[in-house]
Image 1 (tube, rainbow, N blue to C red):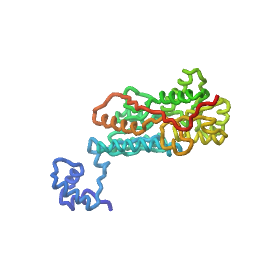
Image 2: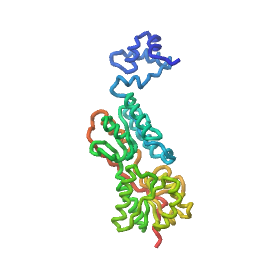
Image 3: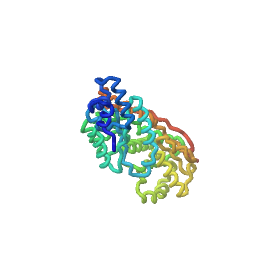
Image 4: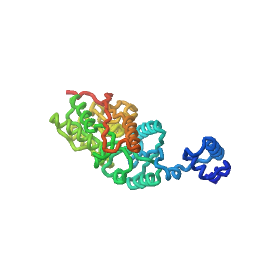
Length: 337
């Protein structure tokens, strides 16, 4: 049988209200009584119900970290989320705060989880680690004036939302320019998503670099369904592509494997640039040329700004831009004349 507040009160010889005040560290209770009650709690193995405890408090000293629906193998295994969670946790610990994860297999279930966390006062605010055009969660947070920060660029209410981001259009432009500097002009943009904000921004940057150099632009090569993989070889042949800009590192590795299956050699036949500079970029040869987006700083800054919102130190929309850096490795070589 679970130990209750009544059990603690009985053994400590105090009222149940006194135990509740000790749990909430109320100043009206003496240090002597607090020590006595806490010792009894330890002896009995009593763990306070944090949800019940927080119902009567203004703050819970916890933040919710909302992950996108984990509906694909790429998302499940993407190190971006693990690294950003670690950064948020480390920053939260500096403020004596904890984190709770909200995720699900669909946006509908994710919204229900977030509503539950908010209504039960489990957290003081939320960090969304994605920006998706189909997402109902951000609208719920915004409409109900719930404290939150966003990692990525919002689709709506840009001037009223606090968000932390890279300049993803500049990332796409610089990745493409690096390939152009190495003699490539038939360059494709490859992605496995078409509804996340970073896709649009990076693809726009890719187009901008090519147009400024008066080189042809191509529709993005979307590899989402099994049949898309079957037509990839035809796409490479029709466009005479010599280089690829790929949406992120983990998908770049899959794209490289697919190209090699069709007889292409990386980087001899196809040069590749990607984004994130994750651990996957140096797992196998050739090592991946990738743009480091400083994932840790994205997480830390999102946590800092959420804390400022919770404590009424920040109210209006703010955009924080995190610098990036191109890491040159082995997947880009100059195009042979």
